[in-house]
Image (cartoon, rainbow, N blue to C red; front, side):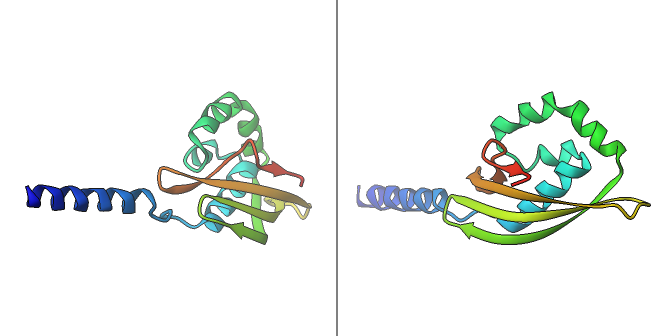
Length: 132
């Protein structure tokens, strides 16, 4: 009986430590990947770094992303302020867009909101915005 109780306590402690584990990725890296994928039209990449509820929105917007792909943009991301707590991160950044083979440069300000889902930081597209 005593062993059973000890075993149950160990299992409960392990379960609690797993559920409160820190995310396995870096929110700054995810925000940078998100901004680049967004402007370069890489919807397959976007679908791997957004919330599950945002994947359907991306699927519905594939024609828009395909148009972005045709523009042949190279995106550089400069991170600004970063606010991170245990379950939410807000990152402000500047996206510098260069069309390959052209000298035209556009700067877009972005606000990327990330949440923890499945033990990883992912972008909440509904709370994020470009042209911030």
